[in-house]
Image (cartoon, rainbow, N blue to C red; front, side, top):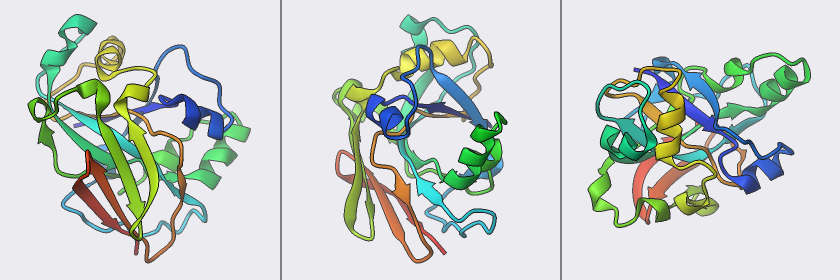
Length: 203
């Protein structure tokens, strides 16, 4: 199982970090060891002093495919969930300044909590999925799939031109504006259309 992540997929988030709006999906990967399931806690890594949350819609691949045409992409996912792309922002910025890859800032153990998945047919309009994150009970991030630069079908088409997609693979589709830092003791809760699907306590 692999995790395909899309960066800079919401224009306002790209702007808040001073990044250009991409012309193609920006892809990076996380290993299976990044996944946190069943509302397990995240233990604050000792290699960072600036850990950020990035809340994202997550699509689970349902069948294998390679070079998938966009018009058939909807046949390759049946479930949608929500996740958090934890980012060691200080490590990422240091890597960027040196023009180095920044997987160590994104792909460390526990950096990809995922919540309960729901059937896609339970959602009326996939291009109008509202989601949000609360930190200690206060909403800190809100997004909607309508604001994605690249929708999931386009992402699947593009990603599958490089990687064979397999059942169980997860696609993190990018985060909206409003990312921020966390500290030990914080409690995060993520929801789709006001249905809470994920909890993460920072220890």
